[in-house]
Image (cartoon, rainbow, N blue to C red; front, top):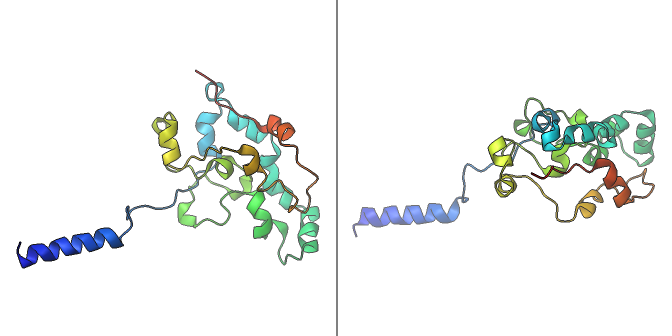
Length: 182
């Protein structure tokens, strides 16, 4: 093997060991409820958009824009209004702390707790061909929780200053949005 060939092998091997497996990899981006709702607003796909619109999740950000929410924030020692506090936004919105380059044109933080809050940023799994293949959708960022109750309790818990208890079974009935079989 010539010296140049050996040098090339060493460079390729070094690059393989040093560079990430996919140098083009980037975090998934947020698309927003309008994008998800394009398909999930019809009965054939479960009408999940309507379930969300009629839930308190769709109003979660608006709940932070009240004098009562600002009082809670002040009482907790926060220096900003509730609607501007990461401690509140963490559970009342989706994508509030995301690089703006990862936010689609139709995404609005003001939509509160939305599809991508629970199901993950949808930029890579939003297309119909991907969504028709659950395994592919999961590979492209769709979150399917093995323990939905545990996930819900990351926000619905005693750390919330307005927590009044959480009955998962009762609450789930209000927001259940399964895909129809068939």
